Amino acid sequence: MLQLIRSGRPAPAETHSEHALGASDQVASADTEERRPLEVPSPIFDLAGLTLTDREKKKARVIGGRKRIVLSDVTMSLPAGRYAVLGDPNDRTAFIDLLMRRRYAADGRLNVHTTLSYPIGRVRLFTIPVHGADAVRFLAKLYSFDEEEALAVLAEVLPRPSILSQRLDDAQNFERLSLSLGIATFLDVETYVFDGNVGDPTFPLGFMRFVAENLAIRTARRNIIVATRQPQIACSLAVDSLVIERGNLSIVEGVDPAKVKTGPATAEPEPQEERDDEEADGLF
Image 1: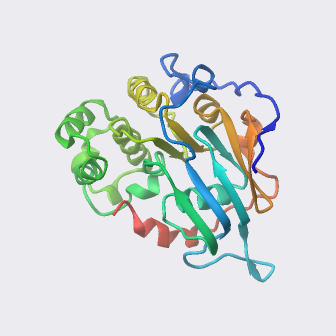
Image 2: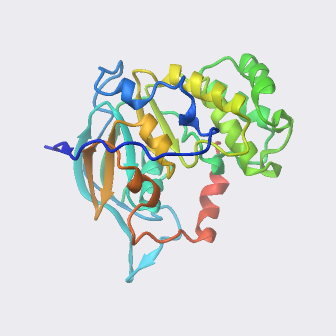
Image 3: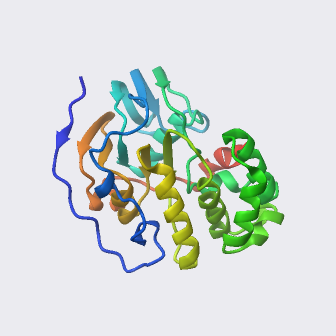
């Protein structure tokens, strides 16, 4: 049986950016939500003897002549909760991809018992050759929200509303990120997944307040899995940590801002050319 490792709850790291998602005092932070019963089924997922290797889909990165092991023969159930995923940045990405069925285990089984959002903040999903409005319509059908209402609201609040009539593969990353965050405010799922940067210093404060306030409402009493290197975001959204280390997966009480930002000292940057196959997948 998996045990909760009690390590205390460090204070969130200070930030001087008022544009971060966690900066608004309107946000229902993890401090106000922690330990309150969640209105979602538990557990979130079960792993049974699961082994996950880095780059399992294509172009496996070779270290010492073998694929990099992310998880090795892991069996556990993850209770409902609000978690920050900590560990090697490449391992965090691989784990989120596993949950989203964008990557498959080398061995074992994953059973997901919840409805998941798309990885909010992952701009690579929004690099496909379609107009922004088409992405909104597709996700509206996938997640059952009103596409016309969403398009009308986004046209008013996005930093650059022109992305709705622009091809996503021609847009800039901050525009794609704003669209990812804006659409997320219309989702109604049991588990919200955040991956990557959840904010940009170029975003107007009004847009970030809109996102923060609406996501606070949406995510209240719901599960959260957040994989980001922004300490304030992780500490404002998560209560506990889901740590990937040496092939193991464990729950640790609290969120250590230093580990959110840096990851293990041995973490290696992911080769850019190995991301092409994932970028091509996009939302569709």
